[in-house]
Length: 186
Image (tube, rainbow, N blue to C red; front, top):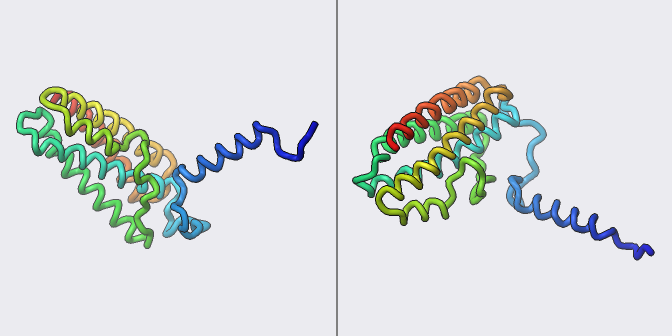
């Protein structure tokens, strides 16, 4: 007997879809609808890459800064080297966005995604002492470096903007270098 209401399965799927849209990686509520084409010759892949580099680098910089208060940490020399490169990449991405007239996106702010070091993870590492600090930070950095390479490779295979593709090639190679540095420090 039909009651005029959609079956429970359909209602559940609609509810799940609504939750995913509300909490997913879409534009924030009240944001204007997206433009029909990416600005200044940037593909959707180029934009997605840059939108991920910013929060990945910012969260990693926050993690690396934890070593400053840890004089005995084996990761301090590695952190100093990584910080300069991450800051330079951030500056380059922001310059590329500015040249295309695109604003920085915060669509991934607060998301727990591979390659993003969360506030909770930062807090946990911050409370760790001695070798536990180095072990926990190494695990976070390894995950971030590996995921950054995955994102860079996606841009390398599908990106269209020469400067963005060049940046992704540098990200891929430096993350491989940083993984080696991290292993040597462990």
